[in-house]
Image 1: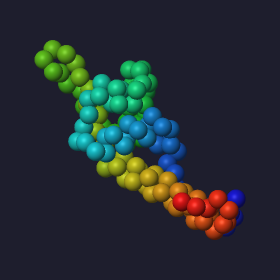
Image 2 (image 1 turned 45 degrees about the vertical axis):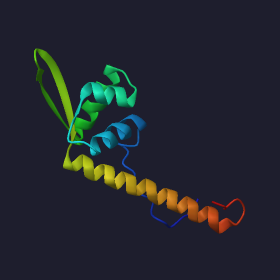
Image 3 (image 1 turned 30 degrees about the horizontal axis):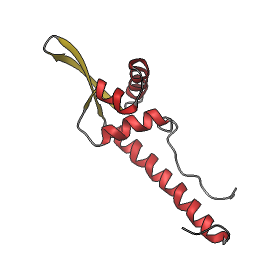
Amino acid sequence: MVTGESHPALDRDLHHPTRLALVAYLSASTEAEFGVLRDYCGISDSVTSKTVSALEKLAYVHVRKGYVGKRPRTWVSLTPRGRTALGTHLAALEAIVTAARTAGGAGGAGGTA
């Protein structure tokens, strides 16, 4: 472990794989329907609902409810705060990868790419 260096600012609220996958998916769209997010993440309705609720409390996502015909639907979109949090988190992950590659190359042994 290297001391004296600052550690990247990982977002603890986005670090969980399901939250990260959901937010990353939303970053590439205006909004997504609940079922699409559920299927993309490969999780149950309950887990999707809990994940969306947690992200909504953080103001990372906005939830819009409505109807398609007579069927209720829920759409989720990424907020500017969520987009910023994702960008910061991804930059921190990239910094970790860069540091690992640098450290692997500096040691000589096993440092081939």
